[in-house]
Amino acid sequence: RPREQLDAPVRRVLETLIGAGVGVVVNAVLVPPVYVRPAGEAIYELADDMARVLEGAAADLAEGWSGEDAYERLQEARELDREVGEAREAVRQAEDSLRLNPRRRLVGDPSDELREAMSTLEHSVILIRGLCRSLVDLDTVTGGRGPDPELRAAIGRLLGEVAGTVRTFGEQAAASIPGPPANPAPLLRALARARAGRDEVAKAMAGGAREEPGAWQVHGHLLANVDRLLSELDPEGQTWPGTSPHA
Image 1 (tube, rainbow, N blue to C red):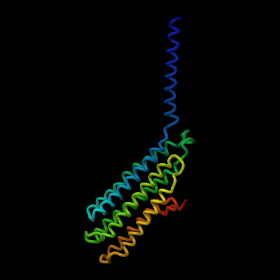
Image 2 (image 1 turned 90 degrees about the vertical axis):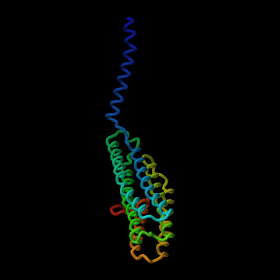
Image 3 (image 1 turned 180 degrees about the horizontal axis):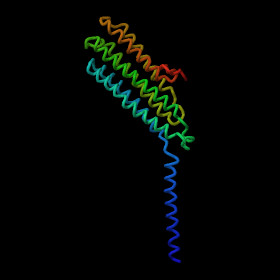
Image 4 (image 1 turned 45 degrees about the vertical axis):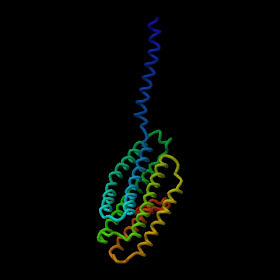
């Protein structure tokens, strides 16, 4: 009789432990984790890395002109492909974790938002590489002298504003995944500042010395890349080939 009284509590403890273990196994097998938030964080980290490249170029231009610095920034822009791959993998993992997952109803399905943000940043990386390529080309066509000080300073300020816009895009994309869409006002303000900087650069290009005819083509490429990049980041009208403007 005492032995039976002793065994009863032991059995209850064992049953509790077994039940808890079965629950953990069932949850791991039948209800896999959702990797939505890490995907949002990966998107922000990619945008932050992109902004750092532009900020580095802006800092270089504020200090003077160096063809070596311009080439280093181009190399950094090329190396962003690795970060793109990591973010793309995080988005893929998030989509896989949502597929046939009961918790999908709780967190929603931000797959479209993830893919759209990822696509925007992939396109933007190409355009940032084009911007950095234009700086290298400016060094070449000017024989290493670079643009005149006024234009150099204006380009530096513009790149700083573009960097801020890229980072703001990443912040808002991450804040919206999962969750309701973020307030677009900060991004729209950043875009407005960058576009004002773009106009300042265009004015400096038009009013600068015309001693380097070859520089005008590079100027055009630089402005075109800026225009495309800002349009890509604009929530009111991405215009990359293959996409349609949307609000």
